[in-house]
Amino acid sequence: MSIQAINVRNQFRGKVKEIIRGDVVSEVDVETPWGIVTSVITTRSVDELALKPGSDVVALVKSTEVSIAKL
Image 1 (cartoon, rainbow, N blue to C red):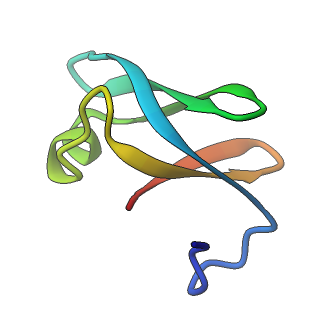
Image 2: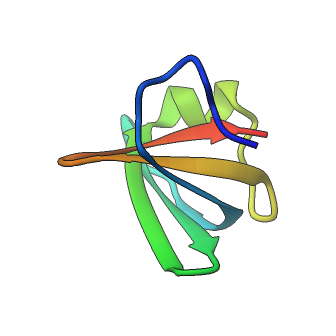
């Protein structure tokens, strides 16, 4: 499955391995078949996406940023 509405070439399907929560931003480690991809996103987004270890996600990589989409 790919996210069609977003123009991003590099999409890596994986599972959330670890979340390091902060007051404003959190680090989300995603285990993919090619290794771990880390995204720094708002803690509010972590909560709204209901991310937790084991969640299926797609890491969307665009030159200087990594976004997360929940599957």
